[in-house]
Amino acid sequence: MKKVAAAVFAIFILYGTCVSADDKMQEIIVKEGDTLWGIASTYLQDPGRWPAILKHNNLSMNDPNGALPGMKIKVPMLLIKEHLRKADLTYILNDVLYRRKEQPDWKGAKIHLDLFNEDGIRTMDDGEAHVKFYSGDILRIARKSLVILRPELKREEVNLLTGIVRTGRTKVITPTAEVNSMSAGSLFKARVRSDHSTIVQVEKGRAEVLGIDTGKKVVVEEGFANITFPKTDPSSPVKVPAMPGFEMADFNSRGEVIISRSRQGESAPDKTVKQAIRSNSNREKSETDKAEKLITKNSYRVQLSLNPYFSRIILDQVHPLTEQTDVSTERDYKVPDGRYYRRVSYTDEKGMVTEFYPLPIIEIDTVAPRLEVRSPENGTSTRQSMVNVDGTVDLGSIVTVNGHPVEVKSDGTFRWPLVLNSSGENKIRIVAKDLSDNQTVVERTINLRGRGED
Image (cartoon, rainbow, N blue to C red):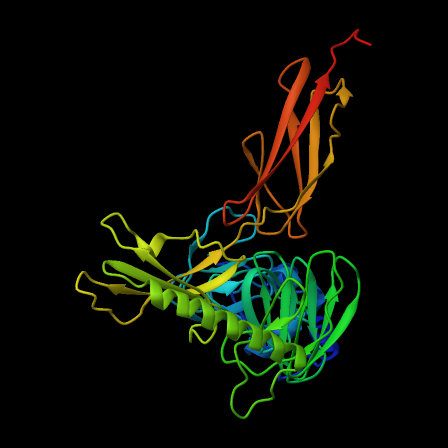
């Protein structure tokens, strides 16, 4: 017995002292009758480190096979298996949903929800959320955003499929870019637009932006922003003024930054930005003057802007007001894809004009998702009654094969074993649909040959 106790003490010295008292802890609820060795085997990367559990929980036992009563114990996160490490949902505003890995249904999230690898968080029209990782870094998720979380050993990671996040240490991966902070205390915002491009704006420190399609890297310094379009190198960073909260600079199709105006006490944008501001300002004034002249009795005036302050108005129109008019659901504005703030004012039959009232923000997305089907090739002949449908799709898309929902993995790939219905010609229809109901369709024809056929 003394030899066993000495061995346990030696292991404790070997493993227990490897864990710093300052390590972040994760709480584990022990099942009734579970043993110290069982807990270590289930949760720890190295089951031999079970003495660390003793050290951090003041358990008076020296037998790893001894049963533990149903209780809560603390374990250093750095020792826990990667797929079991969790993040904490520390803040919720309005409607926020979550989805567990490989589960189809989204559910309402609650404060301090435990989040694990491949879990998803989705903020709705008026929702926001904060996720805290074991390192202490906080991922702030803006409204109408979708992220997949991956708490990692040295660097936490998230997939941003749509919307905006604001973070410091966390690696952000989007459909077109990978963003890494390059200095302690860095703070940056990343946005995925409806055209799948990625905008990165650095508030503090610096960040590296890697173009996923091209492999080109660009360093974005504090006070700068850049954009990465699909299948294009990340653009050169452009100086931009600081913007509060989740507000970010935007870019046009030529990669030129668009900002309404520089703010007092902040750096003014460069020459290209100033020219864009001047041009936009002149165009907006002209459109506003036209709208003013068109205001008539029983009409409504709607304005669209890229920011909630309406300092840059993208659209200003006046329309007749009838009993059938539903201003809040209108979407056919003939403006480029993007996220727009809206407001409306009314003119009654006496010519009295109301103040502007806010309308729900809209996301205009007319770009169909990318869908590539690798196999089977069109016109293939086979004697096998089952074929695998393989391909890749833009993240965040829903894929169906002949009407059957297909799981899309975190890297955008999918596979579906399809049973051919009959001998002869078989039609396969693969559909990818995004959150705005834009869809891409690929069709294949497969010939199933019976035995004896050439």
